Every structure is written in C-alpha cells, then in structure tokens.
Amino acid sequence: MTLGGVSRETAERLDIYSALLAKWNARINLVSRASLADHRARHFADSAQIHRVASHPVGHWADLGSGGGFPGLIVAILACETGSPAEVTLVEADARKSAFLSTVIRETGVHARVLTERIESIAPLGADVVSARALADLATLLGYAARHLAPGGEALFAKGARWEAEIAQARRAWQFDCAVVKSETEPGSVILKVRGMSRV
Image 1: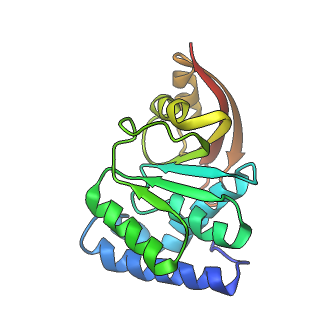
Image 2 (image 1 turned 180 degrees about the vertical axis):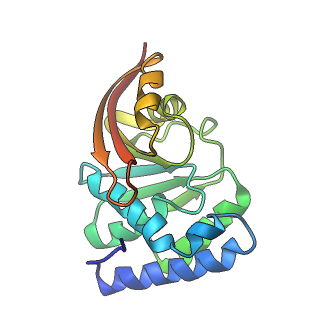
Image 3 (image 1 turned 120 degrees about the horizontal axis):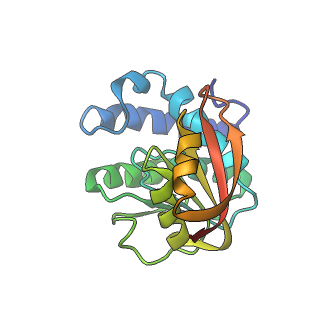
C-alpha cells in the first residue's frame, strides 16, 4: 500500500522526506534497514491512516517519541493539505533524531515544532490529540496521554498483534474508553482510539 491521492505539493514534500530519511538513516538508526526499502508503505502509509482516524478538525496534535517522524511528520505534511491539525508538536528526547526532525520540517516547509526533551519531563502540552507508534506498552502510553491531553482529547496508538493483551493489562491500572480500528497496512495490527482515561 502506498500513500496516494495527495496533492502535488504533498507528494513533493513526501519525496523530500524520503530522500532525507535515506540519507540520515545511514548515520543514525531512524528505521530498520529492512523497512527502509519499503518505507512508503511501512511508515508513510501507516502514519497517514493514523491521521485519517483522528476526529478532525484537530487544533493541537502532539506526537510522542517521534523518532524518525512517524506518525508526527506525516501528520504535519498532511495538515498542509487538509488544514487539520492546526498545530503539531513532536517530542523526541534523542538529540540526533530531533535534529533530523527539524531538518525535515525546514526542508519541507511544514508547520511543526520539535521538543528535545523526555515526555515525562515537559510541561503538560494540552493537546487535542496525542499519538505514539512503537514507543511503549499501552499502560505507559496512557500515563503520557493523561499528562499531555486537553480535557476531552483523544489518544491514537498504533499497536501490533498483542493489542488485546495490552488492553487487558492496562485495565488493571486505568479506566478508559477504547475504539479499535483495524490497520490497513499491517494484518493483525490496529489503531487504538482512547478517550476518558483515569487511574483505577
């Protein structure tokens, strides 16, 4: 699956992103070598579906542990075309990955900011949407979301085949409403749309 049906400007931004990802990945580990060859399906399209399942329009979107920019940079690129979200914050503690994110933002001309800090150390972001992909177990992610979401906000977490076990484990410590959206790019994987989290 590829990321189709986008404007020429969005396609050009994605091409710039692709080139920078290949260049930087030779020096720092942004994505696995195996997935780099198929990054448009494995990372771009996967991130785009996270953008699609959000409850738009979104004011402020915060992507936690952005790493190589998934889904946060793709969200920022798509926002140039759709107008939502209005604001994107990428949180990445690793200074080298943070430098990569800043480079892509500058080269593509998208509107986003990078915070080079630990998720648990920064002041609450008050985001309408919080996202994370391949970052931590669900119980840990709920703690991050509870800290950084605005009241009534939603969290979007990409999860693999063990998602049901993660939900069961998280419910020992948290109460939350959770909708499950099947992944279009990865069989057995899902996107969890979580709202109303509170500690048990």
